[in-house]
Image (cartoon, helix red, strand yellow):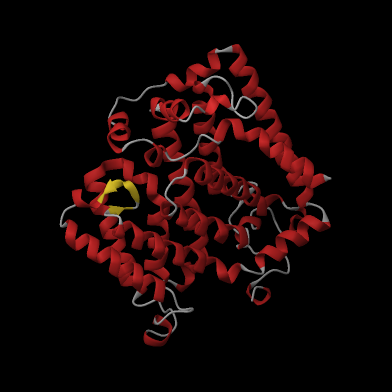
Length: 357
C-alpha cells in the first residue's frame, strides 16, 4: 500500500516535468540555436501571476514534500533499510555503468559527426577530422580499459575545444566532463587491459573515495545549468516544444497553460540537480529522473545515445553508498552511533568495502 501511494504521488510531478525533453533534440537545429542566441527572458516566471497556475504550483509543491516525507519515513523502517543496503551490494558495478555508457556515447557522437549531443556539430570544432578520429579512438580505449587516463585526458581537451566554440552552453554536458575527470584521475583497473599493463593504481589513491562525489556534483550542475539557461531564461524554446507536440491536449496530464509547463519543467529539473548535488532523498530523486528520461525518450522519440551516460550515471548513483550526502547525515540507523559532523564522511554502519563484493 505504501509503495502504491508513493507511485501515485510521483505522478503529481509529471505536469511540471514531462516536458523536460532536451529541447535541442526535439526542435530543428536552426530553430534551437536561434532561440539560444536570444537575450535572457524571465517570462517563464509570469506563470506565477496567473492565480490558476499559482494554485496548481502550490498543490504540486505540497504533494512533492509529502512524497519526500513518506520516503524518509520509509527509509527509517527495517524494509527501507534492507532495500538500500541491498542496492549497495552492487556498488562495485557502478563505475562500469558510467564507463561503458560514456564509451558508447562518445563512439556514436563521432559516428554522427557531433560531440556530446547532436546540436554540437563536430565539424565546427578546430581540426574537426582529427577530433572525430580521436573520439572514435578514445571511446574504444575507455571501453576496453587501455591507457584509460590518456584517453580521458584527450576527451577533456576536446571538451575544452567545444567550450571555445560553443561557449558556456557546453556546460549542459558537464556530466561528460565529470566522468572524464574521474577516469583521468583514477583510471580503470577492473575488467581492463590497464590492470595487466599498468598494474594497481598508484596515484591519487587517497582521493579515490571522492570519485562518486565528483560524478554526482558534475551531473547535478549539468541539470541545473540546462534548467536555468534553456528552460527558465529561454522559455520560448520549451513553449515551442509544448505547442509543436500539442502537449496540452493531454489535459489529464499537463496544465492548460504552456507557460506553466515550461516554468515547472525548469524548476523541477533544477531541484533534481540540487538534490543530487547535496545527496538529499537521492535514490528517490534518481528514480524519478530516470522515469522522466525514459518517458521523454519514448514520447519524443529522441536519439538514444546522448542519454546513455545519464542512465550510466544514474545506475551508478543508485548503488553507491550514500557517503557525502545529506541522506547519510540524517539516517537514524547510524545517527545514534556517530557524531553529527562525522556522518557525511563515513560509511554506513556495517557497510564497507568488505561488504560490497
